[in-house]
Image 1 (cartoon, rainbow, N blue to C red):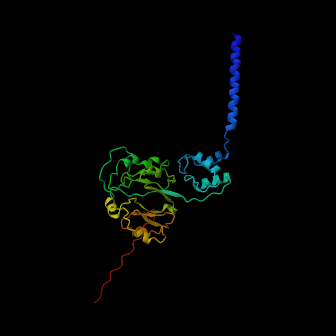
Image 2 (cartoon, rainbow, N blue to C red):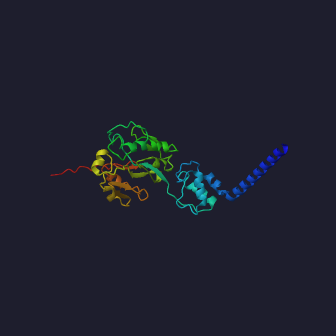
Length: 287
C-alpha cells in the first residue's frame, strides 16, 4: 500500500516537473522583450490617457513613438511641443513642429437667434436625440444642447451656458484632445489653429440649406452669399454646399470678412473692440 502511494507521488512529481520544463521552453520561445525606452517615454507623457494622440492611451502612444522611425504625423496635444521634445531626446529623434490647436463651437443657435419649435422629452444624450429627430429648432444642423461634449472633456474645459443653451469652451483649459469633436454627432465642434492671444475668426454655422431656409431657421446663419470669399485677400475662405468655411491656417486675422458678412455668421473672438469711425460732418450748401 505504501509503495503504491510512493509511486503515485513520484509519478505526479515527474509529470509536474515535465510540465514546468515544457512551460519554461514555451515561455522562452514566445517571450516578448519590451524596449526599456517605452517606460522612459511614458514617464514624460502627461498621463491623461485622453486619446488625443489617436491611440488608446499614453503608454500605447509611447510604444508607437519608440517603434516609429520619425515623429512625422505623431503629436501629443496635451503635452505639446515640450513633451514631444523630451521624447525626441530620449529616442534620439528629430522633433517635428506641430501647430497648436484649439476647439471652437461652430454654432450660434441661441434661443434669441434660433427660435424653439418643439421640446425634447427624451434621454438627455445628443446621439440619442440626433437619431430620433431633427432638434428643438427649425435648424436641423445646430447644437442639440444635451452636453455630450462637456461630459467627454477630461480637462474641465467646457460647460453648458444656461442662457445660450450652448457649450462654452474655456480657452485656457482646452488642450485640443478632440474628445468633444468625437462626442458631437452633428460635427459642430472643430479643432482650429491656436493663434496668439487665442484670437480666432470662424464661420459659426454648419447649416447647409440655401440662404432663405437657413436664415429663416436662424437669424445668424450663413446664407452662402459669398461676400466673405470675395473680400478675403488671402484665399482663406471657400464655399461648398451653401456654406462658407475659413481655413484657420491660411487666415491672417485681418477681419475684413467679419464686417462684410450680412448676417453676422462670422465671429471674431478675443480681438480688441473696433474703433468707431467718426461721423462725417454734414455739408451745408451755401447759396
